[in-house]
Image (cartoon, rainbow, N blue to C red):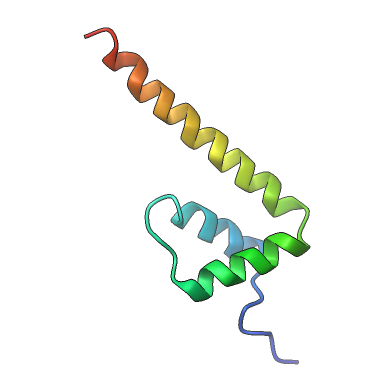
Length: 68
């Protein structure tokens, strides 16, 4: 059975979510990510965790800058 070109596994999607923090994803990867996120219950939870970590890191960076 052939895998659909835009279907990604949870493992692939978590890698894309992390990569998206550092670079803009190509359109095909963005579409694959959206399709997977619409069907999966676990990956949106991971995405929220990544966003929480990003926001915490932003606050942490600015926390030390206020003391100087």
